[in-house]
Image (cartoon, rainbow, N blue to C red; front, side, top):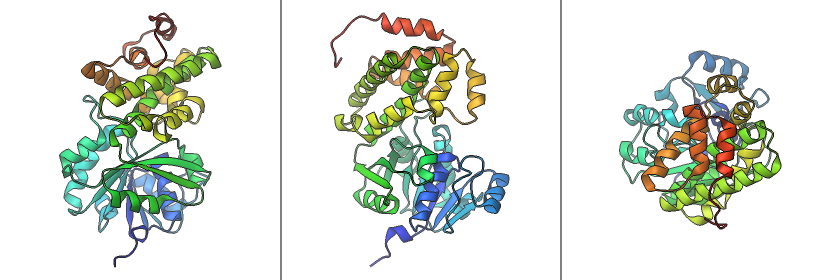
Length: 338
């Protein structure tokens, strides 16, 4: 009988805040963990300080966490790989991995986005590069990196096409402060993770303009309605959008200033230009990118998504946030649930 999966090495690709937090969680649970970052200088500093001082200075690395800038070394002899890069870098990461891994590789990602320019899902990119039967999973849900890295209570969704991978990853991840809910709805979980960022930008804009709690709550509620409309059209399951990867992640990202998407929206609502707001955040703002993909998908599948469309116009076409807000309020009246 083979050794339990949690004691075999796992590679985490991407040493941003969330990738680092997941690597700390995995290593702290007893998994020999290799954290890969592109930047040699960043890796050298993390090795010396035994923490990611730039993103998570108060979260020391467990002894079972190694850091490397060598991708081949990170994935050598590793079956399970967790990708936590920006969604725009996902396809390139897969292409770089392909010649380095064995045929029994299992791929998990925590990227919350869609492919730029096409709106394709991450699982479609994995299928293209590695084949549709490759064991794969997406990790998504209401999780801020700082709270995860410091072992504050957290729950998340893991959706997979493979029961063995789902069970093994759950065993790797779960501890007394971290709970995993499993799913087979790859599409729904990814839609929830990508589009909640777009709605969070809108919630930030509304708060930045001083619209108050009533407007924020209405925007969250109607934002969930349009996420679900698109998700169901694409084959997602209704329960996904009411769960951790849907409603849970949406509430978290729209209401707490740890969310970079909400902070980006707050800046826009206060009149700060888009490029300046992104520069001040200092990290990838997925909601700004995903707004474009949301509009592409809505048009392709003929789904009404007025909030996403308004955020797209503000971020990518320079539309006035106040004007867009009142256009949303002036839309034709409809029944709840539509």
